[in-house]
Length: 425
Ligand code: NAD
Image (cartoon, rainbow, N blue to C red; front, side):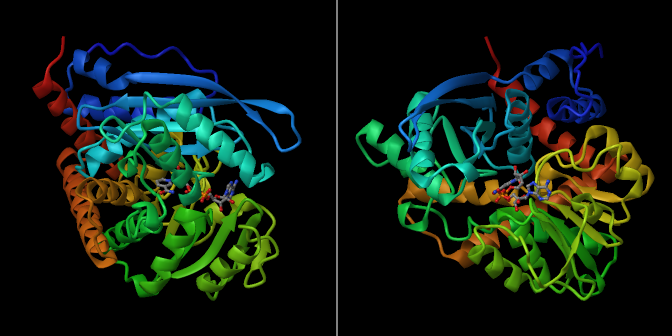
């Protein structure tokens, strides 16, 4: 198969290239023909907008923002919106493709997209963030829609921004359209269980993998990098299932307690401390945030950002299992080192798909004009996550590949088949 290699990228750990290198391996295992390969690797649409916003001091600042739709053959595209000072088009492109594979791995009828605004929400007032969110929604009014492209929260955004997006889209449409975004507050049509859904999926994936490794959760230790939406809920739910979380971290540093961290206490501390663990006293602070990644634990959950497990530190990782709460936390170049060390990795597109699964339930409920109970949401999402894990696990055995490549094989196979059935020009 004569795939044309993409042009060399200066940054060795470029997230888009990281994703593409796994995609290429999976495509080769599937024997994907070159035409399909070329269709699937190219994003359908990339939009860049520049948004002028009046700041609280009366000055006007221009923010660069993105929306990339990678693929929508399985259904409307779905993907979060990230507010972060380092966000760029390459990152958003990689994350959009990841969404395509993620939705396909768990077999929900969505394509993949991602958005981002290059801004630092920690240094902006609530009013400034609201104006920026509304302006972004209006700029992309023709892209978003409940039948076309459906945003959700991601790093730096939460229910609050989703409420504003839903309201702005509805104002522009002249009617309430709550199915246009997911991750909304409950009263606006948000689903029960959405807030903790990604962390819950991480917990389900961890337990499924521990079972395969024959490790009793009650005898296992866990380190979680990132204590935001994904990391804090994963830590809490894993603690409830008997594992001992001995280290957590956020932007302010890493916190370690060999006897186990009181996660409830850490969550409450963070709530009272403007969203960070700064000066958290239930654990000792480690000098280096990266130290957490190389701790002697059974399970490592990177749940902060991409490219944290790299050539630089992969050799030093001691965990037996890595469950990727974040998107793209392991660079492609680190994959081989991790595999040689026989560390099992539950890849991002599987491990953190609980969020998009419940987002799908939210969209379904909005379209039905009906609300499910939290029990129903949890039961259905746990089932989807467990089934997806089992299917990927079986695929890994069938092709003799890692769980990551197996997840890509499952996803690419589904999207490729749908693409072929739909046909083209
Ligand atoms: P968040 O903004 O709620 O939390 C991010 C956390 O990471 C914060 O605690 C932050 O302090 C911490 N952090 C940032 N830089 C760090 C560093 N250098 N070292 C240690 N910690 C650091 O974001 P989130 O929604 O929890 O998302 C985290 C990751 O999970 C992202 O990769 C995101 O794409 C992915 N993800 C999120 C969802 C979701 O539903 N929120 C779903 C799937 C994947």
